[in-house]
Image (cartoon, rainbow, N blue to C red; front, top):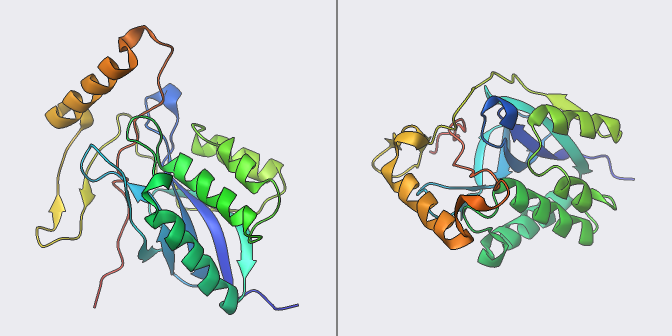
Length: 223
């Protein structure tokens, strides 16, 4: 049997405790060399307050607000190429990206893990497991991972409390664009009002949280 040289994990960022006013934890799928400090991250994010985009990128494996990562599988060098291609194909298919205000990065991760399950990369039941993690806090996910016998690797896990913050670096010539707090973002408020009107207003049962692009990701410098 080939000894794994790489790891495949779901990485979870932020506290994500709705009872404390947090937005949902951010999630992505990481491919990394054992004992490496960087990873290949596959995730979706929301740079415009309107639509999600698939944003595969190299980035540090550890992050100040990484709560932890739950290992999905060990991979050989040959398997890494195949898994990366599978995730790229899944991510580049816009039909797999949820509508803003309806789903979020957690839905995308659950779908991607389900795809990897069908392709025989991860074990049976992984897709359903991660579908069940949607809208849980990072602490709740940690407990479920450990309880299911999965390997949980804790991160630094610094806490960012309260209202989600939509600051992010978008990599273009303009550098980092400071968007600010959602409650102060006029474009976001207009978009939310449109969504409420589309779904029949506030008389419905509590809606899913609106995920905004992770403010904590550090991109690996290019060049």
